[in-house]
Amino acid sequence: MTAAHTATPSTARAINDRLALDLLIEHGPLTASQLKTLTGLSRPTVADLVERLGGAGLIHLVGEAGERQRGPNARLYGIVAERAHIAGLDVRVGGVEVAVADLAGRTVATGALAIPPDRDPVQALADVLELLDDAATRAGADTLHTFGIGAPGLIDPVSGNQRSADFLPGWHALLVTALRERGRVVLENEVNLAAIAEQRLGAAQGLDTFVLVWLGQGIGAGVMLDGRLRRGASGGSGELGFLPVPGTDHLPSRTDCKGGFHTLVSGVAIEELAARHGFTGNAVECVRAAAEQEGSTRQAEAGAAFLDELTGRVVLGVAALAVILDPGCVVLGGETGRAGGTVLADRVEAALAEATPLTTRVLAGTVPGNAILDGAVLIALDEARDDLFGRPRR
Image (tube, rainbow, N blue to C red; front, top):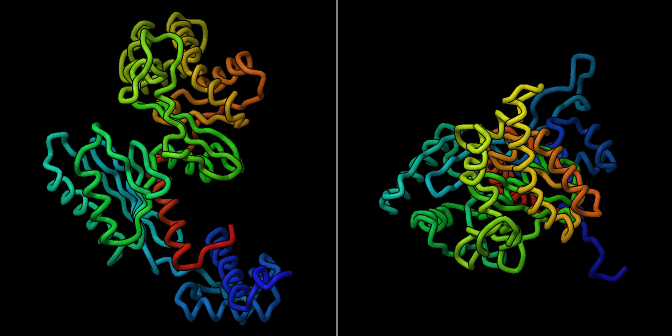
């Protein structure tokens, strides 16, 4: 082994400390004996790291393991969750939703704010910062260590900055700049964050390779290959709405996804399709109502016909991803994708099996609530823990 690959004592301590901290995050409070078993480290090494992490203010004594066991071996150690707080933000064109979490990952305060399109950008920024400050106060946090932001559009994978786009309001860029003055900022495309949330909390748990197809008012995809989120050279991986497909009367352009896959499966397109089958309401309501129909009534038959036609559209985009990436699994996310549940997912999987030679499971997204916001919290926690705990070996 060369000197460059020899672990120094300080490096070994850092690796062991991070391992122990990750185990405490995953399992909750543990005794020194449990840490010894889970890490495979010797008892003296575990004793040293417990003392070291306690002195650094990262772990503390939280109680004892049980009534039958007393003494030093029964002491339970846990993460000092209040050591730092982070914020996740789902930043949309028409508003923002925030969640503040402690270092252990517990969400302790939330908030939401609608922002009219004619709102002055400077005033909109002030409103969002006030929302964040209020959430931080309710969480008992004097400052926020890291901000994870999910936003529409392209995020440059090198600079981490959002590429300018005509459809984005001016307060978006002002917000990112303002938050970078307050702490660490991790900016990520919103659909990519939903993919992260589905991998850690939802339908894609345990999968290193899969694709999330976002079906909502807008269309996109999050690509996870070999355990890594793939953003592409310019951050444009997964811009599925621009995919040229049959069934439209023109091709999309560099500035407009109309004529692409978006034209067939956007929220507006699905509402128009649903109306032709006798369903009224927004896309989510129509898809959910159709998926819940059972039996042989006329309404159930209309629902089945609607879902069959919708499946024929959805599979065009899913099949393109399947034959190029061979992900093995596609998760239907977004408000509309989740509304279809297993009924829509099973239909798409069956159609996909007829359209490609590859075996590809299709699952409905299962992250409850706002998957984008959950993903934003997760990436903020990753960044804060890497800073405070030390970066793990990748």
